[in-house]
Length: 268
Image (cartoon, rainbow, N blue to C red; front, side):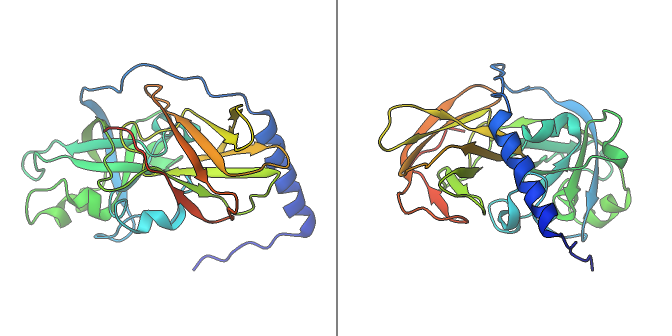
């Protein structure tokens, strides 16, 4: 069992000061208007956790316990830095398929990027997927999932896939610690591209869209004040620059750690 580290008051204050500084000075993300790569590309894959497990709790994208429940459950994966893109790859969906016909199915498994694997197989610029035990085993022919996991590292092919969350609309989670002067949001259940290139919010009394800044993983923030809801949120995807605006999706009486669901989503 891992122990949770203890922090002094001065360390905690320093952390929040650094976070606030980053939130206020990060430049807007540049959009890449190229379509996702439609062709199969080479990579390698491993697995982690229990053999039939759903993957890790949380992860470097910041989705927290969301990775433990459907529709993300058992479909999560960590990727190397070349795919993680300092958090720009969070939420992206890929199809991954292994190649050994003696043990691999022709069926590809679809995974959602929720974490980063920065070392080991994922280092030195390699394109690598570290999958949950369950997702890894699904690449095998019937009855051979255990044998496939015993192989360890596998050569695979992969390609981008549109994310699909049937019956779900885009939701905005207000991160813990948010106040009327520092607001941090996390996007959930984004169909289509799955990624976020930029985010803006608009206060109820204003016609101006305020730029949010990328903090870490899939988390975005804005410093202002006092910020007054309800807030409309405009989201632009990183891969294709598609934009969606959810009007007054975060209410006046919003609270930290709450999630607010819009009535909209992209078409996969």
